[in-house]
Amino acid sequence: MARTAGIVLDLFARTEHHRYGPHRQNRADLHVPRDGDGPFPVAVLVHGGYWRAFYGKVVMKPLAADLVRRGFATWNIEYRRIGRRQGGGYPSTFEDVANAIDYLTHLEDRRLALDDVTFIGHSAGGHLALWAASRNGDSRVEPARVIAQAPITDLVACGPPAHALMGGEPRELPDRYAECDPIQLLPVGKPLLLVHGADDATIPIKRTREYAEAARAAGDEVGLIEPNPGGHRSHVDPRSPAWRAAVEWLSDQRSTSPQALR
Image 1: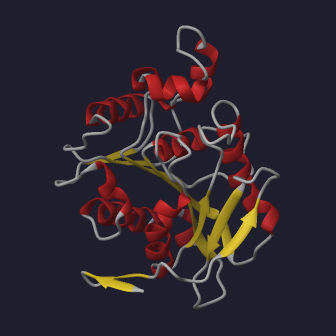
Image 2: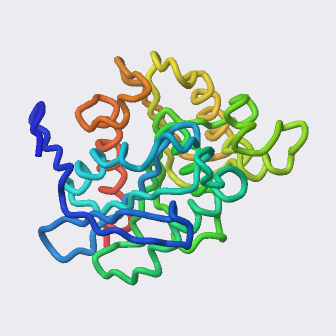
């Protein structure tokens, strides 16, 4: 356990490991607060890394630990990515994310409040979180809200990394892009928070600003926070201003949610 700036990073907290499918990457970690019986609000965590196999769910573990400390159960999912013979890309990456989220109902765990679920994704995981929230009517688990941190919101503008994910360019596969591109799937119909630092050198903040404008025009409730400083990787550090802004918004949202008012 490490303590920095008053925040406990319990990276070695007990973890419940689950498999939601037959592939070796069909794995997810469940973290539940030790105190109390629940039901606890649930945060589904989706890691980024340009959908590539080099990056995995371990990068979200510090956020999981911080959320558990705040009284959330967390579901930190893995999925097939591109490279290392994982078989990632369209459609398997999307199928895995959908199946991982839906598997929460299979657990039949009374500690989990599945009517109070937040999707939280970073970078390419932000893209997948926004996509998953757009599966209205096709998902067994509907989010109450979505937090997308430095997200990829426009697959067409993303270029080669998106081409690798989708199996080709937008002009070749327009239907695939229409099915999977957040900016083409608006409105989401859920409260959205976009957190993106202006000095992000990996994903241009202008695309997040454009997505926020388009989502508002489509009728969505959208918050946009631009932390300064706010580099691309700061979002997965629970000590950062970017993460503090995210959890403060989450607390405010939940304080006025139907679940809180019951």
